[in-house]
Length: 122
Image (tube, rainbow, N blue to C red; front, side):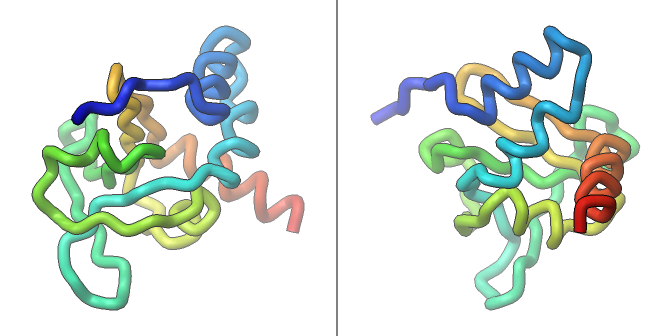
């Protein structure tokens, strides 16, 4: 059974961000999003399963709002919020968010910008 990609608030925020050239539009939806992240082991700690990012010099973690979009990846997945994910991944790691009909990519620079925004508001 395959999932039909839907326009979630997070996916919509990525589209609006591109249209308005404003990365900040993504952050509120990313923080609130319920995600599923691919991990590398069965331990109680988050052991991220890292893969090459779209920039081959870098590494990323793969996530999806709908776990169906991760079904072809034969590693464990755990649920996390976007806020938990941003707080838990190292600063050099990037994020690829699968939607079923494509993906969105957050670079380490964009994630650093988000972390800076969060620190200012803390």
